[in-house]
Image (cartoon, rainbow, N blue to C red; front, side, top):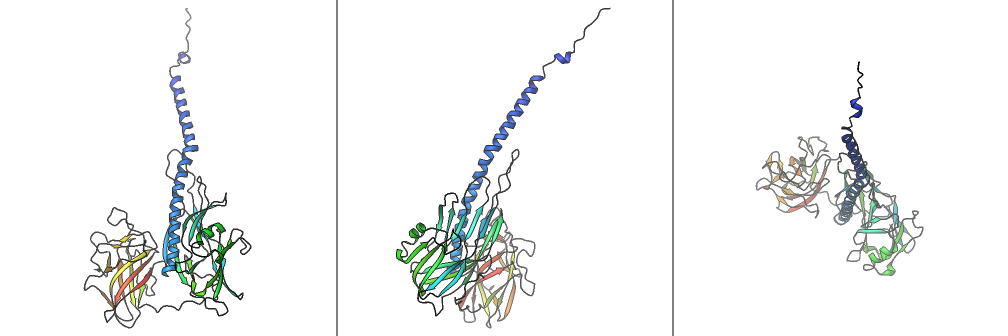
Length: 450
């Protein structure tokens, strides 16, 4: 019998090896490419995102500085916003670090000192404000606010870059000091509404203080900055910066201004997130309170509990309120306007053809939109339709006023998307005429936060 030798044909078949090797090599190139993208491109893109955010924050800090000055000048609450952190673009095959949070906080208290030539003195507490970014890639220092100016502090070099510098001395020679008070801290990636409230301290009225005063103001800025900033506003012999032990914090210097007349000193206290309650205002006489306005605002915190404030019908952009006449004589409400809000709203515009302002279902203005002039902190007047003026008898109330609805100004739809007004604050101006036809206007706060 003939012996037949069988060769294992599978051990000799190499036709499938080349594609497998090619696939492995291709996969290796993909892995190497992704690793390079993760190690180089992702950090670069995230750093660019962080840089863009930091540039936006600088603009927002500048707006906060202006809002603080507006509180001092207009003696009414102001609102500004800041985006605390940043979220990176979504990725499919690569990985992002956690979102970069940021924080806004006030510093420790430092005293502004007002001293007479005979050695007597009074103190008012104030604070700095710091925005501290928590970026993963872009390296930068904090942004600070003090004395009507904002700047970036570069920790590695000790230098700083000014963002805005508002004048400390007005054109008539008045030294304007703003004491910022309240302990505050907020951290995250969310957009934060910064609420700023006035508390006018008035004129110094202490008999023991001389008319010529020396004022010491805490500052983190150095002598070079103040020499340049104040050189056109005060004679050089009237101020100096001392980098001594006036304040325990080695980063805080003392700006001293000499021989200020009592009439040339204006001090305002501003509270962040709530009314100023800081200690150290003893020795300052509060301004006499203005006579209580005849028109008062009612929102959801009314004791009767029947005013719904924001979003009462399930529509987030809706805001209902009432008006009370606290005087004895009847008043006719003839016009209304919106100064600003604590949210990012640009206008009020009803759905479809509905009016933006109604009272118990009746259209009050012959316009499709009420604009909000945050930039000017002034209200556009919107006159009521003839014969639709709302009369409020003395010591009486009219409820059921509705702003319908607050929108962000982005389209579509017309006027933008609705803004959630729950827990918001709306500052309005109301125009009214009395029995003699004399017109007056009142600024009111509609507060849905309490």
